Image (cartoon, rainbow, N blue to C red; front, side):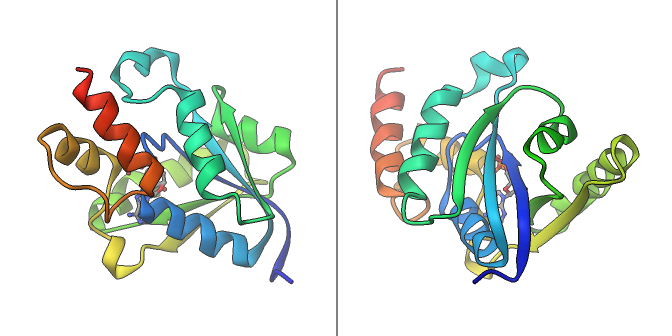
Length: 166
Ligand code: ADP
């Protein structure tokens, strides 16, 4: 049984999902009754993502298949609107080093202004993942670095394939 009932959203670009994301999603799913992983599909940034929104969603579906209360959905509207549509009561995000704090502090205030009924909740990154970002993983893989310890196995394989096509 989980601690809190209701639905929460874990939003992100997940380009691609890393073991750090998975850690936050898993820990969130142990606290909340239902977790929707929201994959941002920003048409303005389409050409800058390594994987399409559908591909990013498929990786998350595959790697969270054992978590019964987690599902994945693509969204392209305002985050608080997406949360409202789902009937979610909170947005849950991971918090890494100090650098995340400033951005998240601003986003939490803006989102509260847009909808005071949706709370922003932060889960502190596990120490061994606090250095890990999708951007870092993409850069490492681009230059042939081994990312197999940082992302789920199907993602590592897909990254190697995608980047060798370029
Ligand atoms: P990234 O910052 O890696 O590009 P996203 O924009 O997809 O990732 O982030 C989605 C959410 O996951 C954000 O709340 C972000 O702070 C969090 N997150 C990303 N990587 C980690 C990590 N290694 N540990 C904890 N939280 C993380």
